[in-house]
Amino acid sequence: MKNFKISKFSRVLTAALIISISLTACGNKTDYKKQGIDALNNGDYEKAESYFDKALSEAKFRVSDNEVDISYYKACAEYLSGDSAKAEKTFTNLIDFDEKNPDSYYLRGLLYLTENKPKKAKKDFDQAIKLKPDDFKRYLGIYEAMEGVSLQDDGREYLEKAIAIKGKTATDYMNRGRIYVILGQEDVAEQAYKKAIDKGNNDAYLFLALLYDSQGKNDDAEENLNKFIKHGKETAETDSEVSAFYIKRGDYDHAIKYIEKGMKLKDTTSEQPLKKNYIILLEHEGEFDRAYEEAAKYVAAYPFDNVMKREYTFLSSRVSTNAGISDSGAVDGTSSGAGQ
Image 1 (cartoon, rainbow, N blue to C red):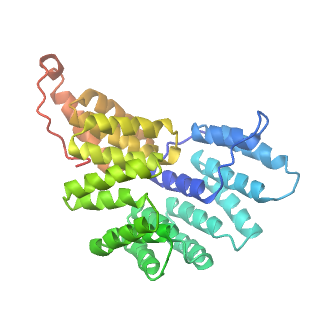
Image 2 (cartoon, rainbow, N blue to C red; image 1 turned 120 degrees about the horizontal axis):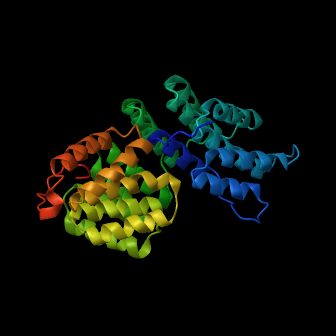
Image 3 (cartoon, one colour; image 1 turned 90 degrees about the vertical axis):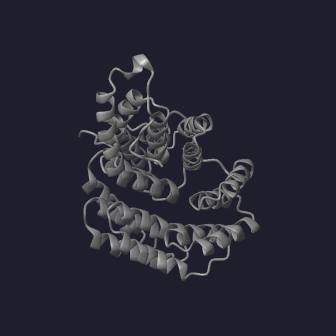
């Protein structure tokens, strides 16, 4: 079976898998689960599927949490290799095995969205929420997935449901803040982020910085970003956010630093925004030829990103129009506005 390129939907699905299951990728050379995860992260999905099958066969019909984890990974590999029908069957088998596990319903719902089956997806999402109604991040994941297929209004319904839940932990407050931002309630979001920080969640400094940045409060944004860098937990996702922050300010040295740091973490779920930021960075620096080359690879890998498709078209004309500019070094810095 021929591998197909990762889309925005598959990135969401993969991210959900990484969040939902434990990354116990340790062991010796005969650890098929570890080898499968390595192959998955390297984009060799068929090989990953083969390793996960071998890992499951070693269980000899015993089903523990480890075998459930492996099955999730297997479904992910099946989907990314282009066989969504097999992935759906694997998720369904997981549901049959444990009807009270919200992850299985949620992940199958994401899969249904990629197959243009929104009614089935919503049914699975509703069941996932019913089984674990206080999981704020789940509501955010559902919204992001529905937004990706232009079902923002349906996604907002889940955010409204989340807001009705009175979470009390630091992480709850941070995620509530993220939801309030999407709903346009920025004052309430600011208070939620500050409450999260008061309760010890330093990652909320980043989201507070992004909020202030969107409001044009540059000094407050910079102050909170620095607090996150000093006290928060770095991930490929946060590196992407920080690099975008610096690109907007024209601080390209810091931007490329965080793009490179994020890519070194080899987190396949966050590669897309990092690559997008890199293209935007190259464009802002006037490196149109390199930006065009990277954009060509990007749109092939993420065909559902219509914004970057338009940017690729712009860069195509830009390279063609300015084919001789590199000799004179004259670049006017005009861009289509991506990443602004």
